[in-house]
Amino acid sequence: MIAKLADGWRIQRRVIRALIARELVTRFGRENIGFLWLMVEPLLFAFLVGIVWRYMKGPEEHGVSIVAFVATGYIPLTLFRHAVTRSTRVFSVNGSLLYHRQIKVLDFILVRFFLEVIGAMMAFVTIGLVLYVLDEFPVPADTGSLIFGWFLYCMFTFSLCLVLAPLSETSELLEKLTPVTLYIMIPFSGVFNMVSWLTPDLQRIMLWSPFVSPMELMRHGIFGERVHAIWDLTVPVTATAILMLVGLILCRRVRRELVIE
Amino acid sequence: MISCINVAKSYPMGSGRKQVINGMSLDIMPGEHIGLLGRNGAGKTTLIKLIGGVELPTSGKIRRQMSTSWPLGFNGGFQGSLTGYDNARFIARIYGHRYSDIRDFVEDFTELGAQLKMPVKTYSSGMRARLAFALSLAIEFDCYLIDEVIMVGDANFHHKCHVELFEKRGDRALVLASHSPDLIREFCDRALVLHQGQASVYHDVNEALHVYEEL
Image 1: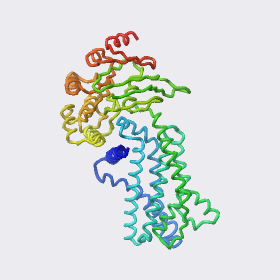
Image 2: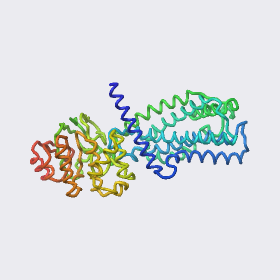
Image 3: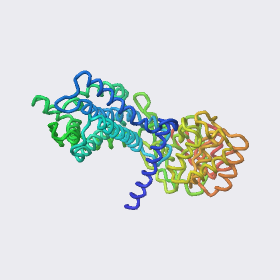
Image 4: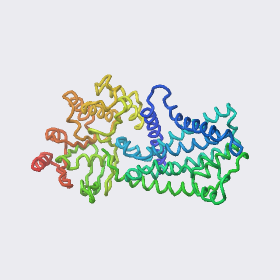
C-alpha cells in the first residue's frame, strides 16, 4: 500500500515536471525572455494601476503609499483572475494528453495554477524591490503573516479552480458568465480598501468574502502597524475545504464522461 | 493480463444515450494477438480507448496487469504545436526514460530527418504513424493497442513494423483494429467482431472474418 502510494507520487512528480516544461514551451516559446513572461502581465497591471491611482488620489491613502497599497492588492487579484480563466475547459484543451494514463486531469489544473502562482510571486518580489528602491515600499513588517495570507489566498483560488475546471466542461453558460463574475467580484476582493476603513455593517459583509481575510493578513504582513487589519480565518478556511471536496468529486465525475478525440 | 469485465460504454445523444458497447468481457493474455473487426462506427476505436484507459467505461471494470501502450491511432498522444523532438522529450519524461535513447530510436525508425524539428501538426498521417510507433516501441510495452493506423504507412514502414513489432516483439500482446483481412489473418490468434454493441469472440480467425464479411 505504502509502496504503491510512493510509486504513484514519484510518477505524478515526473508528470508534473514534464507538463510544466511543456506548458512553458507552448506558451512562451524558447525565444527572448521565455518563462519570465509569466510575471510580465501581473507586473504591468500592478505598476500601471498604481501609477494611475497615484495621480488620481495623491501619493498616500490612510498613511500608506498608494502605489504600494494598489500593488499588494493587484498581484493577488491578477493571480486569481488568471488562474480562474486558465482553468476553464482545461480538460478538453489538453485532452490528447490523456492518451497517457499516468497523466491525470488534476495534473492539468495543478500545473496551470502552479505556473500562475510562480508568475505572481516573481512579480510580487520584483515590484516590492523596485518600489523599495524608489522609497515607496516598506520592508515587510511581519513576513510570517504575509506568507500565511498569500498561502490562504492561493489555496482558496486553487479550490475554486478545482470546481470551475470540471463545471466548465459540462456547462457553456459557466464559461460565458466567468468574465462578468470576475469583474463584479472586484469590490469584494479586498484589493482597494482595508476592512477597517468601512462602516461596521459593511465590515461584516466584507468578512464573508473569502478573499478579504487573506488580503488583510498580507497587508498586515507588509505594512504592519501602519494599517489596522481585521481578519477572520473561519470563512476562507471553510470555503476552501468545501470547494476542494466538491471540486475533487466533480473532477472524478466529469473525467468518467469525458470524450476524447 | 488485461481483463475487461462486463464493460459498457454509452455516449449522450440528444436527450437519450447511444449505447456503443453493451456489456462485454474479454481477457487479453500476455503474448496474445487479438484482431478487432467491425464496420465503421461499430465501436472499435471506443473499445481500444477503453482498454487504453483514455476514456472510462460507463459501467464495468478494466484491470490492467501488464504495461499497455496508449492507443496508436490517427490522433491523440501528441501535442500538434510541438515538434517531433519536443513530443519525444515529453514522452520520455512522463514514462521515465532517457531522452537520448528515445531520440536515437525515433530518428532511426521514423527516418523523418529534419522534419522532426517541425510541429507535429504539419505531419501527414503516415508520418504521424511512424512517430507514434517509434515512440511506443522505444518505451517497450507488454501490450500494444493499434487502431487502424498501421495501414497508412508505405511499404518501407510496413517492413519496419513487421520486423520491430511482429518479429522482435512477437512475445508481446497486441490488440489490432483493422479492416484488412490479410493483416488480421496473418498476425492474430483470435478475433473479436463488434456489431450493434455486441462483441463476439472467435478463436478461429477465419470464422471471424467470414462473420465480418457477412455483416
